[in-house]
Length: 477
Image 1 (cartoon, rainbow, N blue to C red):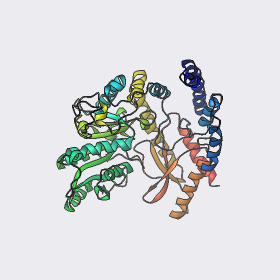
Image 2 (cartoon, rainbow, N blue to C red):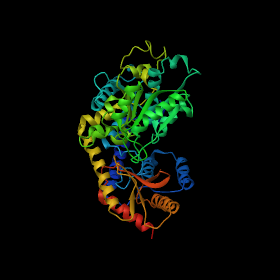
Image 3 (cartoon, rainbow, N blue to C red):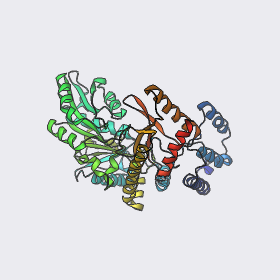
Image 4 (cartoon, rainbow, N blue to C red):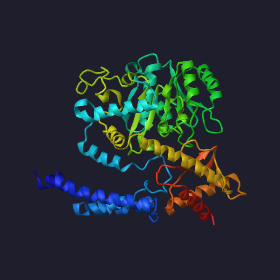
């Protein structure tokens, strides 16, 4: 064995470097939680940022690795900073990150049982637990996959196989069928993307209008469905938001479940961000009826404290998950489509996939589901407190009352025309990004620019959000 290979696989080298890295990361967590002197985003223009990394790459020696990790930490977007209120990506619980280190070193690929025995069993336990907290019954089950986009595609593929009334997987699409899915105007773009991936084109998406709270207009469902059918479309599914990405609004899930039962439609709930609300006694009614869905997607890397990407796709009837990818692969699956729980490649888009369930299992083992419950409840509480702060400010406007931990608002010092108001808020967001005192994003609501905060960090408090408003005022001086 060569010296370099021996060094690369040395347990003692791993031990030393691991201790050093964990110490660096622990110091980083302390800096994030106790001090606001570091920027949330150390902004550099892309070209300016690329040059030092190109220089560093030409010096790949072990001696520089501690500096490399330090530079990586310093140059990244700091989700653990309490003034990170940007995208829907959670600062992961440190235990989940540690567990992912074990997952990465073991590197069991999870396609069939023999290449991931422990993690296959753990995935079943975790998905059964998820189905249970959703209230979907003992016949439910599912899989873990790489992100909400693949999760939504998986759910809709199952809908096609179940409600298409022919074996699309084996026979392909039929020219005489224009299959379609009804979705909210506020649905995540991954739903429309899934429809196009399935070959249905833009006509395969039937949009349902929303009310002023950006929830599906329940009164419009029947009209939209009849119009779609009259135009020759075969609607096979309805997608509900729990909650929407842009504004955090929950659709009327229970009403939509009734509608699907009446019309024999597959009901898919995109709960990527807000499905975990079922764990909060205080807010679980926001997703009332989710247990009646045929398929549900939940991202553990959004509101359940896990690193990306960790997504559950849960089916009301577990056998539906086997019909989605009914394909023979004799070198891998000696007896395809047997319905066993342990050869997971039968039910996922991936063949090789990460040991995603292990970090969820570890968090539940160490802290119980109360960790998730308290985290979600606190985040949703804080959103309502922030909304109250905005409404009492006099120079900020709330887009709509928050249902989740997403709050959309804008700065309005008065006497500005709509276009000028849009430009002001866009400018404020850009300055905040480059200044680094806060990281938040923006969105369009009814064609107008609003600032958008996702309150993901458990260390963010109302004082941070009060300071955000004060900072925005300062930027306008």
